Amino acid sequence: MSEQPQTSPLARKIEAVANIAIIIAAVAIVVVLVRNYTRKPETPPTVGVGAKLALKDVSWQSNPKSMVMVVSTVCHFCTESAGFYRQLVTQCKQQHVHTIAVLPQSPAEAESYLKNEGVVVDEVRQAQLHDIEVGGTPTLLLVDGSGVVRNVWVGKLASDGEQEVISKLGS
Image (cartoon, rainbow, N blue to C red; front, side, top):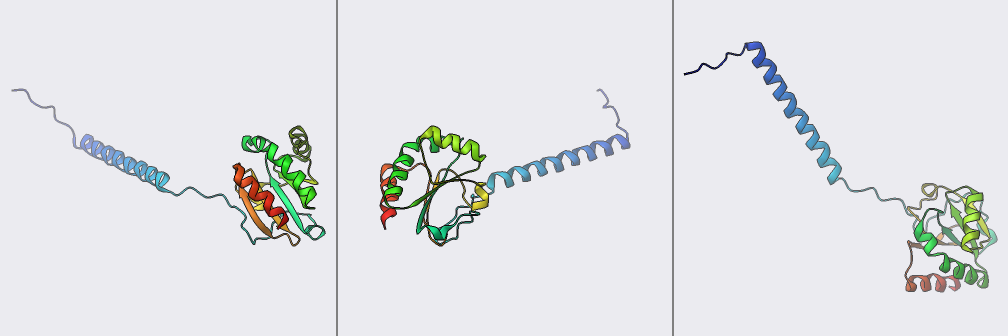
């Protein structure tokens, strides 16, 4: 019969402390993982109907209605929607609705992008999306002469959504 080697009391204490440390670390990792996977994702803010649009230096009073197109040069849905935006701008001109494009990029970059897409608006503004409480691009906002949002459309619109936008211009 072979004898088991004896471990010193100090070695047993070190082993016990190491095991406890491993258990605490494992529990901490599990807690972090559970929190990360069960947390609800933050919903980006989206300006709602009835809210005042926080777009600086816009003279809302000079136009009874304004169509605000919030787009980005890096948004493929915006680029895919350019044909509709050209049609929308034409309808806005016919209905005497002021058009404003808002982009997070520099004014020069924004104007170049819109020109390349053939979208000719009355004004181009630079604003960060969170500053105007818009969660993403593309977003269309129909705003009244007081700067109050009357309608909101988010994302690339299907043809029925596009028709809804155009129909709201005259109402």
